[in-house]
Amino acid sequence: MDLSTILRPEAIKVVSAASSKRRLLQDFGDLAASCYNLDAGGVVEALLERESLGPTGVGKGVALPHARLEGLDAVHGAFILLEKPIDFNAVDRQPVDLAFALFAPHDAGVEHLKALAYVSRTLRNANICAKLRANADPSTLFAILTEADAVQAA
Image (cartoon, rainbow, N blue to C red; front, top):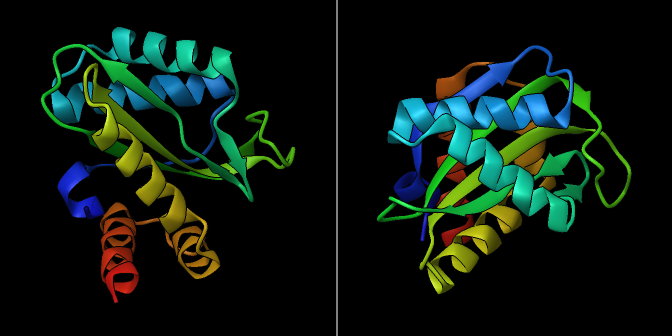
């Protein structure tokens, strides 16, 4: 698996300020609608439902919101860099500025879990996170994330 198979360049956004976790999830809903033809409201509802089970802020400024959705045939992703970190109820109580959302088919099973594990490993890499935080150009962010594939494969 590599991120270039689940993440499109146009599914990356830099947000100067999100007022809340809910607002960030709405931004992901908008990205999912424009990039993957999903219903934005349905995406937000599914992400909020997953968050109600426990926060997806995994620590060190990273959040991995994810949801299973009807109408998908593959796992898709979206990435948002927040210029101003927000409270995401992360496990380490640190604010989040890097968020990678995954949208999976309802019956994805193992593929969803593999994608989540892969994204998690990628964003646990301090060097990759530092590069992401140092850049505000979506095409550069895409290159950094997909370059991570080559690093992890090596």
